[in-house]
Image (cartoon, rainbow, N blue to C red; front, side):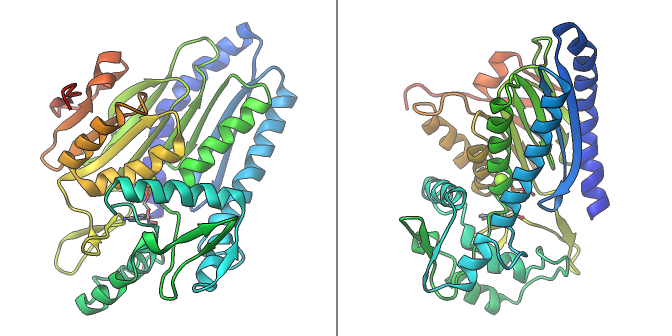
Length: 359
Ligand code: ADP
Ligand code: MG
């Protein structure tokens, strides 16, 4: 599974590196120095590339970026017993002091939980464990056990106050759906502090760009074909945006019944979300929000996802999405199609998700 995941990630990176290579040539003209770093953290392969005024600054920015990633990992990891998340889980029933980073994640999780009618639920963790998605010891859970576990899934019971959080006794939480999005935002703002105006980061397929390429052209980012993850489905041109995908091809197993089961769980029944979508890509300025939404919209399915996008038009104007349906259609939001920054590389038909101004 790891090697499959690796190949998917590397596949996306391929396109990105082509973009970077060009930038490198141009970097000489623009007087920019670039440095890049590959690392494994948060259970995934990452690549960071940053352009600064000089090489020294670029290298320092990357070093600091790596430190920040490990810092956030040590707050959000479910396997590190000293992480904020583990301490909250171990101390269920009582209040636990938390870091401001953890508080921000919890606030966004709460907001999207409400706006998605419970689709995003960080308290789904015990159900995820029962399926074996945390260990790789996959199994289809016994229906009675699943019912019991679902009784404790209720994010509205998570209380956050004055840098403390409390969850009920039987509850356990995990930030798998949001942590990489937040990490992306943090890296981008850190690179800005180093004076960088161009950077591209890939956190296991979560891509986020700072500015444009140094030559002023947008970055090219590929979204993989969920039916053939070794191939790219479409190409996006972005600047100052995150491109975050949730799909049923990322982590899955085939059960004894021959069915495919994946790692995004619908809190409504405790089963892998199966509402007609095989992948959801969210494109926007805020990586944390895009990450939370990619998971939530995947669970909500086509109609609810499109309806949610309509509601966003009054507030977050920059958000776009690409939904891929199980019957092989690509649904793209009107604003993305009109921007000319979407290019279909596949044979799947593209349909538009229009903004209904009468809503
Ligand atoms: P990935 O991290 O694999 O790119 P996602 O951002 O969609 O993809 O996150 C999937 C992760 O979110 C799962 O591995 C699990 O940790 C967590 N998760 C699964 N279902 C839910 C859910 N309904 N609500 C919140 N988190 C979930
Ligand atoms: Mg997500």
